[in-house]
Length: 546
View: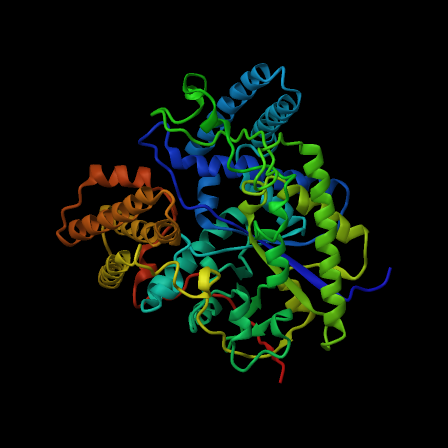
């Protein structure tokens, strides 16, 4: 077998905001997690199991964000997920009976029943209710390079005035990652791929060796990178930046130009939760009668002006195999063109939200499985590797300064700093200043005050989640995003006033700790102006390409 001419790095960003409401039995937004487990995380793990069983050699890079890790390892949410599956299984049985005279629809109903039952068996028996252990298994086997993110996916460019706040996002994330995955991450998915000049100095403190930016983050760097986006650049601190390849990204995520828009794939927006009579579907939607997705969708995308046709999973699966082959062929052409132009093996970096595969694009996990197998067996021009592997193959890289950038619309801060959400920042900045003040001034608090200080740090981190600003801008579930932001800010300032007034309401603090129980090992001192990183690494010398 001849040696490869270049490399492909698939990077999946697995993230959901921290949503956990023990105070209510049936909380609507907790379903975000349950849907993602059923449609994305379990299907991916199933394919990883199959690839391992068949001894397929591959490398994927995947971020598991701290909020997602925290929810996947939370016993309350684990039990609620099983309840969610039990209801889904009950509904699927009813649907098989209801659609007995509609052969195509009935076949799809049986497919869903099989999926729900298998999900329950895998979740309980194979992973003991903790899917993080599944991802850790494939990390330890060498297939996955698991990287971290900000502690609560905080949008770092809009907190750069407060390095203590940025450091808290990074250190708490690494602590969570190390606790659950058994090793320190070597790379980071900056929340929203949002970089600002200077953040790499903090990344360097924690031995993080690389991050991903959007295409313009590399192409607009100074001096202009010699290899464009097809090789990493070093920042002055020695942390490497890898740029997103637009061509491969668009083929997958674009619903207009990409594969997910194919007429044979499942239509996401037709769900029986909105279509069947209320008296029938009532037990399987929200208890208040709010119609929601059940996950049972019977139609394919079809044409724009046509009536939707019944979905055929086998046809869609075959289409996913064709698209995987097309994607691979296009990457081979890219690599072969590039390899004649540059004096090293080029790298194509293709980053995506993990939830695109399965949740939004139902056939996406099949696509990835076919793609990995085809790259392993059907060609020898490209090889799947992780960004860290590329740095080990090519340690000598150019030093350039990327500009501030993100992967949001228009490429900068517009999505997270907009007329719909800009009101949050004066409150977040004021809370950050107060947190820094508390952490710097209070050195040896008693046990109750320590608990209040740690909870104040949690509430600030939860308020900083970029998801809330994003939701406000995009107009989906806005009321929930606004309420979450306001609640965490109010909790923070109430705690601040109680700490300052030495009048901590212990009963109320107990309730806050129970409801917002993320990061149990947090140390409020991470916000101190005098704080020294606790996970400081050795650092590595870099080789500079002139």
